[in-house]
Image 1 (cartoon, helix red, strand yellow):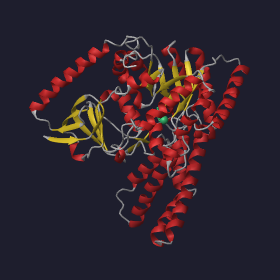
Image 2 (cartoon, helix red, strand yellow):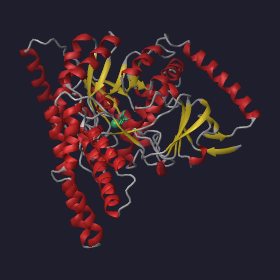
Image 3 (tube, protein in one colour):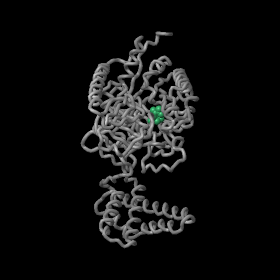
Length: 541
Ligand code: PEP
Ligand code: MG
């Protein structure tokens, strides 16, 4: 038996076989297109873009090694109008498939036809075709991570996992997750928690574990490979005890969120997609305190259309009924990327063009989302929340857009409600002007994940800082108190929706500070409810 240690970020016990996930495998989704002309145009643009990249690479490298740099020129020439281009275009035209897929099939077809030829010129040409095809596919955004979990449930082991990869996995087959990098407040970790999957991070992993029997202990952060029979027995018992404890907690599903001395508290769920709605209702959350709407923009080839967003928000509004559902507008950028978004590389994406900044730069995308939310507002109790706010000027711009959206809907006689709006307080700037910001909205919601990283100047994803990343830092706690007071002064409700809201060691502290609501991943609703019901705010006054 081998024993490895990591950091546990979601509790629970998983017993099963390991699947070691190797990056760099990818698949290209095939889909039918409705507009052949625009697909041909996309292909043409991608072709020119790749040529541009290759000419650029040639220029940058030719002074270092002229002969090697000439490869880039050869590759760029293959992209001139000619047989390769015609083959791809013919496939798009005749089979009405997406360009990335057509490139892949053309590439593989050529490789197959000439695979037995050994002339160096042909071998070189095929290599170049493979490389330009990969570049084209990359630019066309047709690549998607491939994690095939197989038929049996597994413990997934990987170096890193992106939020998109997490989203694309079938959770029913996932017993547990182990990663080498990542942190407790990375979006992939938050997704694992949302799925309620025992997860360890910060572990030295090995490809040799693939297919081995293992036990993952999400309480102590331990992974046992080839566990002996004795340990197996012990963990079978512990897993049953776990289930029993869970059963006890489940008795609180319909219990009110009231402290022992009678103060009512809002307890809401954080969600990422429509699949989470069942768990929100199952655990008896009072509503949705944070819908991370950006996940609808990930793992796909192009922007979601307004109507697609509308249907999703309508479903949420109808499913939640009178329970509030706060939709945060897309917080894209930084670790939440998709090729079609075409966000230019940034030296420091965490401090880059992300969240509300990106939305205000891409008003067409932002307006489509706002219209979808307002249209869906007629079907339930939706609210709107803006991420990463740092200034009142941003709010001026947002308010102007909202006015436009509403008057557009009025002109077309489309029903909507004047829903509640809120601001996420997740930058130190927003904390310092929280009193002014509170005048503009109905509620503030503290995003302690980002607030911690920006206050401590520590990247929330950096595993090397795990030990130093102190989200109980007095600066953070003081900021939270400051925002609660500023919000209340302006008549606003103040919530916490960062991961800290689920930290039951702080529930009593937050309630004493006067917070109105906590929003946590669905699987943490019941432990936090228990902590709220045990708190007595009169005691020790
Ligand atoms: C936060 O920053 O605390 C938050 C809730 O937003 P996200 O984790 O999605 O950045
Ligand atoms: Mg945030």
